[in-house]
Each structure stands twice: as structure tokens, then as C-alpha cells.
Image 1: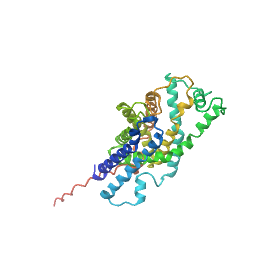
Image 2: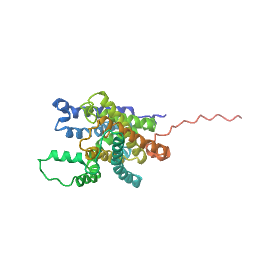
Image 3: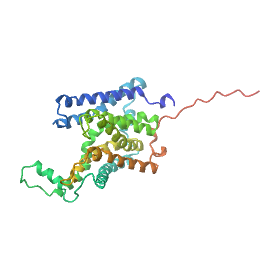
Length: 328
């Protein structure tokens, strides 16, 4: 492996330290205020935290500017997968596909949860959703047909993906835009696994408050790491397949927009399933992600000739042996 094909560990380290330090700094008010998940500004701080990986990228680029020299904006945008969209059709259609696929994956996870008997769902009367709506308005307030409201919620998931995209971009520019290609010289699978694990660890300031799994401890962080490794393989595959960060951005945004599907279809009186098992990033969803990964592997989607060559490490260059003089 030549110097040019080794990971730039200094830039990676600066990115890692900056993004993690800033994530803790942004989340610090939630810890100091002492309200945890009940804090009314939780969503605001969580959204702000999503932009800390982008700031980590900017810090890493400053390091690379000193070590690799000044590069033009077009080069940096290409390396981060922002522009150009080449091939454009593949990138655009992948973005469309992932916006559709994300809620379908969540739906498959809910179907598995129902099959396991962990929770009961009502796909006709949406009785649990009705109860939630009735509790949110004064008694006797007339409500539109609940099925219509549920249909509107489902139909607006693609819109939610677009609304979420700027926030997802704040993260994805770091994880799939910078970190995954930076680790790519280690090989496809080490890069995917390491970038996903770091993505999960980065969530620690919120996970240790009980976010996502209601496990404010090391177990919660480990669960998040595992979830991000599985999901990160799929997001990373879109980056490797298209050399663009945008499919990962829209997949991330669409998945976040789909995370509330369980609350929409749960039946009234059903036991509330543990988020560790049945949450949008719970163990059942790990199995769904893993099944998709296996399908991609078996269909050859991770073969070198299927991945964009622009994200491959530089080839090893071997200096030819000096020629020996011909016998006279």
C-alpha cells in the first residue's frame, strides 16, 4: 500500500475529535437543564447536533489543505460526493428509490414485530392513533376520519424526506461524504463497518439521556452502534455505488420521516413494545437491514465492478526492478 492509498489518519482524527466534541457541546444544555428527554428544546438541540459532522469535515479539510496543498472547490465537492452527479440518471433514480424504500423497510420491520406477537397493529381503524388524537384535543372535538388522516401521514413521508434532507445532509456529509471514502483504502467492508460504528458512537450524548432505546447507559450506546453499523452499510452502499452523497442524504431523511409509522398503526390497548426490540432502530430492524445487505451481496452489488471506481483506493505502484545489463 503506497502513501497515497493509505487513510489520511490525521484528517480522520481531526474530523472524529471535532464532530464528537461539538456534539457533546451542543447537547450539553440538555444535561445541564436536567430534564432529559422531557426537555421542550430536545428537538432543537438534536437538530443542531446533526450539523456537527459537517463542521468536523470543514476542520479535516483545513488539515488536508496543509498536508495536500490547496485544492479547487470542484475537486473538494467531487471528493465529498456533492457534485457533479455523474452518472446523473443513476444518482437521481437511486435518490428516488431510497425515498420509497425507507418506509417500506420500516413497514417490513413492523410486520415482523406483529408476527412475533410483540405488538398488535390496527391497519383498518387505526384505533391507537385515534386514541392519541382524541387525547390531544378537548373532549367532544370532532375529528376528520382517522383513516384519512393516516393516509395523509403516509402520503407525506416523501415530503418529510425532503424537509429532513438539510438536517440529514449535516450528518451525511460527515459519515458518507468524508469518512467512508477516507477509510476506503482499508477495503470496502472495513470502511463500511468502521464508519457505521463511529456514526453510532457519535450519538452518545443523546443516547445516554435515553434517546431511541430508553437505555441511558452503555447498553444504549452499544445498541445505537449496532443499529448504525447495519443501516450504515446500506447508506454506504449507495455512496459506493453512485460516488454521490445525495442518495444517503435522502435515505436518511426518509427513514427519519418513517420512524413514526409504528405509532400510526398500533392498536388501542396493545402493549407498548420495547424500543430495544421493536423501535425503528431496534433489534428487529437490524434483522431487516441485514436481510437487505445479504440480498445485495448475493446479487453481486458489492463486487468491485459494481462500485464506482472514483471511490476506490489508488492502485499500489511497484517500482520496476532495475534492468540488468545484457551479457556481452
